[in-house]
Image 1 (cartoon, rainbow, N blue to C red):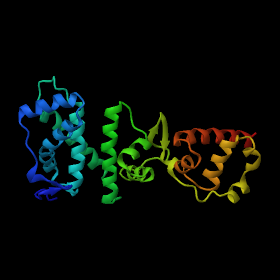
Image 2: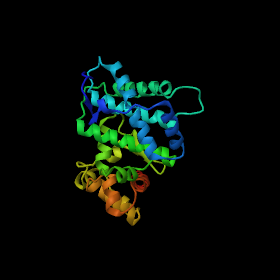
Image 3: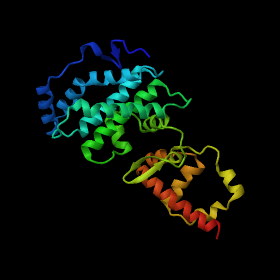
Image 4: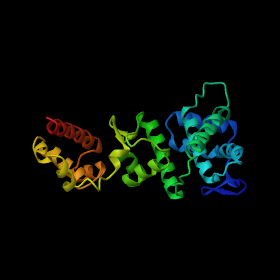
Length: 260
């Protein structure tokens, strides 16, 4: 891994600013007052700290650009959680957080499955925006909010975030929407379970009659047309969380009628 190059992630490391102690104190006063420009300036003024940390991982085979971006996430977390009343230097507080973020990345990225650079870049951007919105609104942002801020399609966000995760159960929650967990399974289109297959094994027509119009529409789109919950939500104009709730309720009603 070469860390001697001048440009990392489009940042000219030879021109990174160095903040004086009084400048750092003044910027943190502005940050605590909600000044986003001061926050960005403080981040830029501490990128050299990230560079010094990733040099500790020079023995790994990871791309320096990837480590730098992950280190920046750790830096941002440190800035957002640093207590200026503590009698410690910011660097003393930030370095362990940057190291921890990079170690988590190396641990989770140790599988043989390689993710393309463009997908990683999308995931990093989403993580940054997610952290920022969580800090600003004091709650985890919805998929729609992240998509609006980043300008990235919702499908691409889900794909990128799935791609950088370690292998997990299809029923593992990917994100939450207004308190409702959305699992990986909910993102998958069902292309095989078409109507002919279902009818051969189950008396669906009778079970479907027990559903209301909205529930029948969702079951039709999900299991007969093979659409994802996200696609269904866009088609009928409700949130994916609502689709998930209605789908689960409808399937429970159908199951009860099929085994009755």
